[in-house]
Image 1: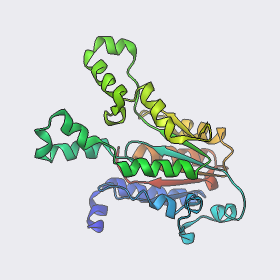
Image 2: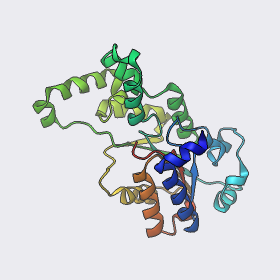
Image 3: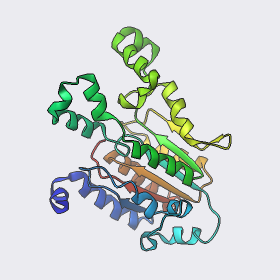
Image 4: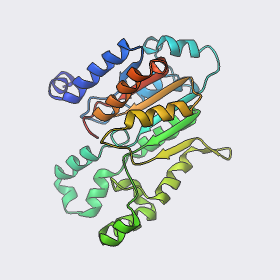
Length: 259
């Protein structure tokens, strides 16, 4: 099954090629999915220094020389998590709805059921935030502008549902109140270790945004958990531009094409 998927999934082929290029540039990529099924998010802990902090056995053989060096002392870790494509996939959710007749009869509730991010993914995110010193939840979702709400009444209806607690179900929207709720996942000891950064662009500028996140942090290791061609391109462009960051960046790839 895995060999067949590799042959027909161009995203997995691209992911492997990008991983090879990153290795040549002194960085690292680790594949945690095949782009078809749910990614193996637990591998993020078993193949990184985050696992040490959670008491999880880490595969030392996959660690880079930089990670092995950090492991012997104190260091800070930054985790950047792509929301859609890692924690559930809008594309896969649409496919699930269209291919499951029992969901059609449920109408909107069926759409919500197909697109709902699994609870285990939320628990995984909490563990990432707990293990890292700083975390960024980076998403392409956005909050509709007030003028759009007036022009398109159905958007106001969607936002109202989002503010009742269902905001992360309705891709591509994410209201300010939903952002506030997401930030509570990172609250510990009166501090918040999780930043939510919406409006992740599909048109370019991701490498520059990623560079700013890296430069704002004093972390000795940066784990970027991404999912798409755009994430791969951002990492590759940044490492080419900033070879000083290459050893610090480890890219986990779910091998999706878009989301």
